[in-house]
Image 1: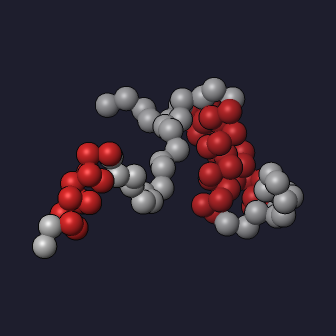
Image 2 (image 1 turned 30 degrees about the vertical axis):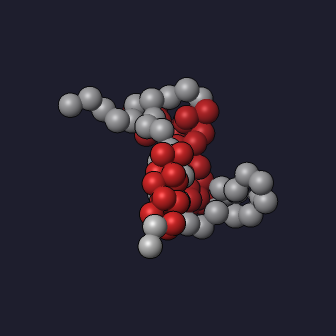
Length: 82
């Protein structure tokens, strides 16, 4: 089975985790200190992605799905009968 993450991306995440442990890792927009382990990993992966390393695409949130036109027409047809 092929590797999901390249060795370079793993090294990037390791570097970011060391920054977090030493207390020097800051978030991008606000500049606040990052204390969360998960946030540090996310920062490392996004930096690796930006550098062009082999990293899987970000997972999209499973939010509300948009209905297709056909499904909308069926739903409106059901409401009218009765």
